[in-house]
Image (tube, rainbow, N blue to C red; front, side, top):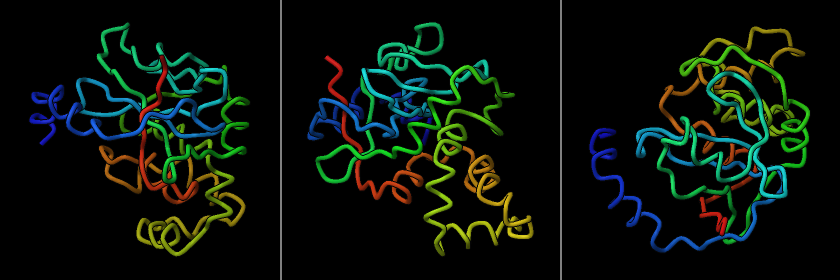
Length: 194
């Protein structure tokens, strides 16, 4: 499926986005994503105002970048044309706590790994406070299944956020689940960055 998605990306991208309403600006703390490698995978980050996004780059550095640099990753070789915003209906939704945490983490370095700590795990880390407050059956069941509920109560919420990649398939859209769970997002709309 990913090969097909890659081969037919321009046509699929046009079809998928042809009726999506553009949003003039994301909300503070919105989850944003764009496609990488022609749609084979995605890159995510947190919007922090003034056309700036905090994300984990491929070297493991948390940095604040503009929308153009966010889209043009991989030394400018990425062909992403759109950035998608977490929305509820026609309105961008975000988390004040996640936005503030993202700003505090700028300059921090992590041991980047595509499978263990990538941009999606960083996005989840920014939502650890929201995940704690939304501790519902859905989250609890996912952690029971992976055997993580034996951790001391004070470690569990942070461990939940920083290890989200172990709960879902590594190729799954982790940021999508967090947007639905923490922000009540029900769709993704294109950010009109013009």
